[in-house]
Length: 141
View (cartoon, rainbow, N blue to C red):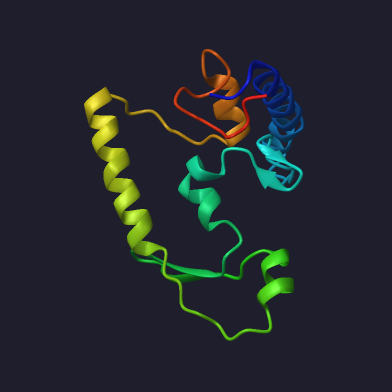
């Protein structure tokens, strides 16, 4: 479990991310702010990070039914560090398919039919105690 002081800082950072981005959603603007779990360019919950965080920035392919294959170029940092290397085919389709099946099973078990579309910051703030249970870190200070 994260130390109380670190939890408070994460909650404050999450609020600082959610407030400016909520208006951007209404205006259909992409507002990019650093994740509230990123401290000194490192994720404090790195071993427990969600799949989207694990795959972020990597060039990829995704096959959507009826839409063909979509290509994601990766982020600027990845391009800067690895752009000189030849393209390695990374197809996310099977990962997303498995995730969709897991999500469907959880929704069915919980009887939840609503839409889930939250950023990490929104998830932190929407949890009753402000942080997810079970999230652990080396940081106990």
